[in-house]
Image: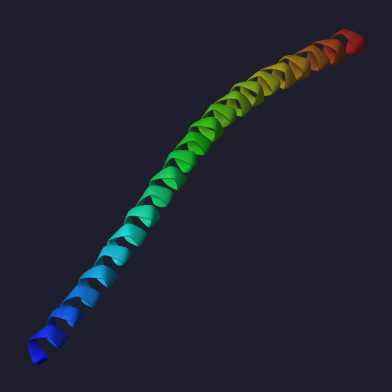
Length: 79
């Protein structure tokens, strides 16, 4: 009788462990999916930041050119 009881406990514990492993597998799949999404978002953000940097450099160049033309205009007006 005790042997049957022990076997039933082992069987129950094994079932619980199977369920736990299944849940861990599901969680792992969800984590992997989230990591892929984060990676894709990071790549998109890096691309966007590159574009912003390029446009900021262009704006700075335009500003410097504008200052230079203003200085030339000031010199021409003083002459």
